Image 1 (tube, rainbow, N blue to C red):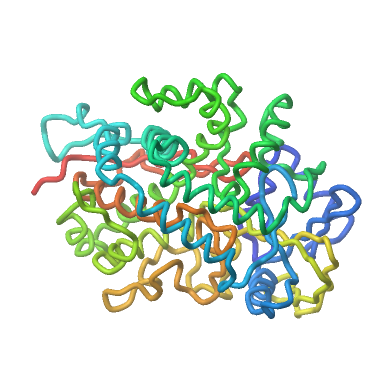
Image 2 (cartoon, rainbow, N blue to C red; image 1 turned 180 degrees about the vertical axis):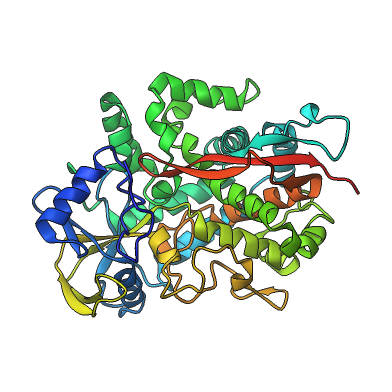
Length: 477
């Protein structure tokens, strides 16, 4: 099956229509509605998906961001489980204040020493230094796709399950539950799960697990669920999930088996962030001459320092180019596949089928769902100069980030981990973690291309990292 990644702004659904029958869906859409165009897929007779082209996406999101705060035209949408939409809230609302405070509490209560210990004990899962030859300039080829996945699981499971969901002091659990309570009180589960044309997680899980997943999604994952999609999920059984969690956790963590079994449904997906890390390393290795001075600066120290709690603002201030690297990697290897908005009152948006076609107005009715692939927005040539080229400088100017929190480009309306009341409560931690891991790898290893090096994406339910082969050697001072 050949699904175009990006074709003149026309293909914007590629990041969520990665299904076995995607070619049939595309064919039916093209036959019924014409190609290119604005596509509507009926899901239950009352709710429709509207898939718009990339040029339209930017215009639509711009209008969405600038609407009158007192008139809610769109609600947010949870990508997994069902159409449990929550209304957009003004930034000054009590709801948003609770969300922001929950995010800060989540970051501030992380035991950084424990985090550093987990990192150091599991770094060998990325690069096994025992396999290095005696000559320091020689190295080993490493496929970062599975090794980063293993690393993230072995650090993420104990850290998040142990420190958030089963913390004795309860500080992180309280912060997380406050976030969930704020969302639930704002939305009250407006819709129940429906039989959908596309069902990213329900489609991948065994039939007997789908009711459990819907229950889990409603009760626990109102906000950050869509940011942890990962293709290998479809290969897991319930027992397999439990075994995978236990393998990563080891015997030292005493957790309720029921809690692990339920939570294990989502945490195997945490490795989705392996693609941005691998992409940044691959780009640095591919352009060593261009990045030579930057690499030397990044290698002077690791951000993993005991008894030192580094937060995102501090990393932005002290290592702006490192953060620019992370942001550019997240732009091209975005974690969230789509942004979806449910229309709550009729609205007209500008629509353009392709870059060379005139703009027309399209009316969206109440209940219709606008689905936009983030990748299409992030590589739209009308918004980005050299859109497919890896250019950290677009986020960096005079040794400072152009914008301290998130991707700086004015047309970039979606960043990894989401925004506003759908943002992941651990966004600051996840972004900090990514920057710290990248800095420590560069601090310890020399990363190069060799004849086997390649960066390859695979396609199942979402785009996943299939191969990222690089040569690692000991860094000679």
